[in-house]
Length: 314
Image 1 (cartoon, rainbow, N blue to C red):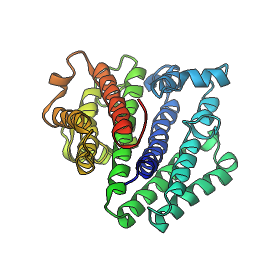
Image 2: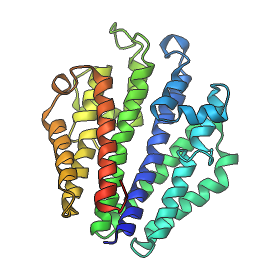
Image 3: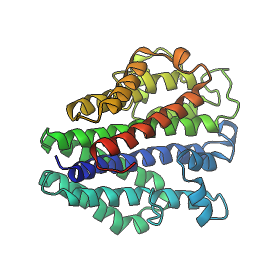
Image 4: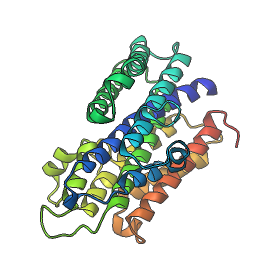
């Protein structure tokens, strides 16, 4: 496969997944902002979210105050922000357009119609006052696109690169969502099911479509450490970091070339550590340093994939 084509399908997967991850993170913070003050983290939650997403400086350049409506507009609708949800949907559509001959017509129609509907309706139909509706719409379109990809895309190298992009981005997004919540923790206690940490962490599970799964398969209470262990290490949770690392490694093996040995080794090492490790062995300095290290390793893999397969210059 030409590196240019591989690059487009890789970034198609990344941008589509990034839009969904941003929507899920925004959903958690928005719902937390509606909780009564006695069970809500302090007002720094919006700023913490921006910093964890790497958007703090960009937001400060455009807005002087940390107004929730401005933050929501910046993350969801601001096309001047290249990392907003709308910008990601546009970028996904542009990458799909660049490889129309390599993807199914159903895939192109799905990504194209998603962008056209978002561009035409988001500024008026979706506002900071009904962000939950917008988040649900983004997740619905993500589910639709995922089904079309699985149901209509040829299982060739293009599919492998799209999977690599999708699951590398998913691992990054889940780690950032956990870090957002950890940064906003405000002295939660372990006094009972209504402890301050219960509602925020149950919302994290819901945002990852894992609350019902957690209740079904886990005997643990909804506490920070239990939730982190569940969404990092579980092999059977669709959005777990382990599962994403596993799929990145499997698809890298399928497209391996003469210069990708070190990239494959690093992906395999991360996969093995998450498969056989625990928080006790992998996070001796705490959960947040462990998650930040995962982000750094994800970024390293992204750079190496760009050099080894996509024609990027170091």
